[in-house]
Image (cartoon, rainbow, N blue to C red):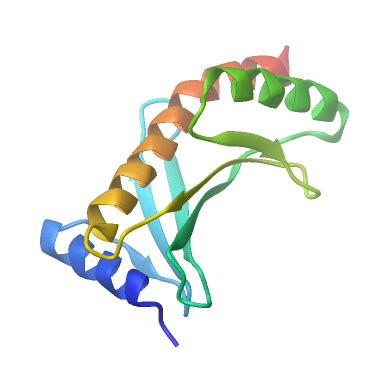
Length: 137
């Protein structure tokens, strides 16, 4: 069953002319071009139980070389003190990801999700040079 929040978000995106990919029952993908990152894909994940919780995930911003894992984690820790809206993590596959969670209201889910996607894109793009500096230093 597709969440009413997901349906409302996609209807909003259609109205404002933003392209997206419906990636299954609970996920929408949005791809943006950025200044520092060539492109960034944000996965908007709607709660499977139809709740008002939405997760925003930019997976694989950078693939971290095994020998730079420690430097990447330290960079994430530093970035997590600088940005209050998102968190940076290195996952088990050595992908550096940017994550955000939010509660949304059905009346404004479209604009709220658009704002969250924009925030995760902008912060990831702004942080990218610092991430690369830490990994390749």
